[in-house]
Length: 231
Image 1: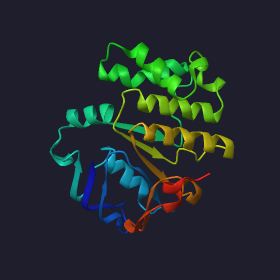
Image 2 (image 1 turned 45 degrees about the vertical axis):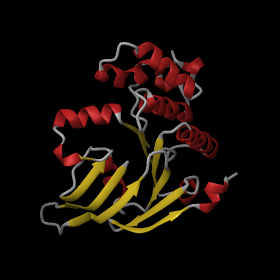
Image 3 (image 1 turned 30 degrees about the vertical axis):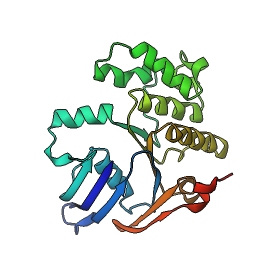
Image 4 (image 1 turned 90 degrees about the horizontal axis):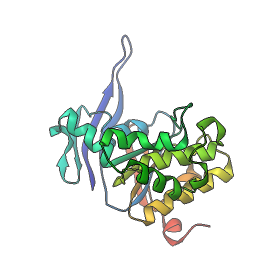
């Protein structure tokens, strides 16, 4: 589903040496996988997520999504793919504060010009266990509940891929486990889930762990414990 071939991305600030955020990264992620991209701060994992999410373009190399080269897509096509094919979950929930959970979830549907936005948003909130919180404003929800709303918003268009960038970074241990369990449930239903994290315990919940350091893939290995079931 996702294939990266020798991706290079370099950032240049005035009067500073260039920083190679991605250094000839190559990897493949198949449909239905639950993958963790693990690395410390500054390792390049967020840049990698931005490229996979079509939020940024590499300087060189090739990105194939469902067999199609991303660099040939127009800006309108990129926006359409981001809206329909890829869902995003971030450490900061990015909810609109003076709107309800329901209204936050409906936003991607408005951009997609769907007619069934009410039905879809209700179903997405029910899927994350917030059927009774649809009318609550963001500030009335706990951190874990706000992240659930963010996940509902990410899945409301039924994307093939869910990119989760440090999705448990602001949560306590109980909420962390709940969010990871929710992501696993979505993956079991067929959604490809890619976890970007610096936390080894979070990464250990994935079936495959790709370790990145200094912009390069350091290791890519099957997580045998998770494949066998982690308590």
